[in-house]
Length: 219
Image (cartoon, rainbow, N blue to C red; front, side, top):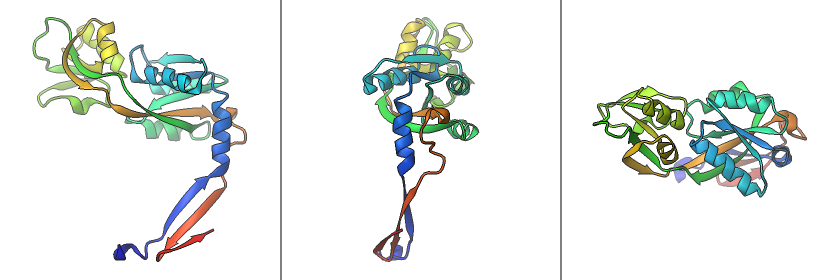
């Protein structure tokens, strides 16, 4: 404790941004996210509307980058993304002036599974979205797919021996279970259009607190 007494920390509270986020969230009528059917993002989008206590349209795309463009082109549209997406930082910063994170939620995903076509032997080549590739065993090679559901489609069509996918996509495409990794607690972010926010959250007012030698000073 003594070694950190001289450390000076800063906490920033975004006041106008919170007001803008609440206003913009009420304008959301459609969530644009990763498909095809059976993805965790599709499940999260429907759960988000349930949590808001209202109906809304869920629009599915091949990639989250396509979903971002779809959201931007739609009045009342918002992007829903998974925090585990490896390129989420690029997605955020490439649309910094047009989309901003207005909400987030944590929920259990579908069961994540290793699945194969019926009658297939021990899988060697596995189709997978980039996010869950760490679930693969040593000795397995990966064929990347743009979503967990597309990985199931690729496996079912013979492009890979097996896939890392969701139990929903596994059942949808007639695959059989090899290993069950169970649901994963996952964060999902909702990115709304800056054009739908009022006031704009670009220059939030801030409250800064300095912690200096055990004394608290508000600025």
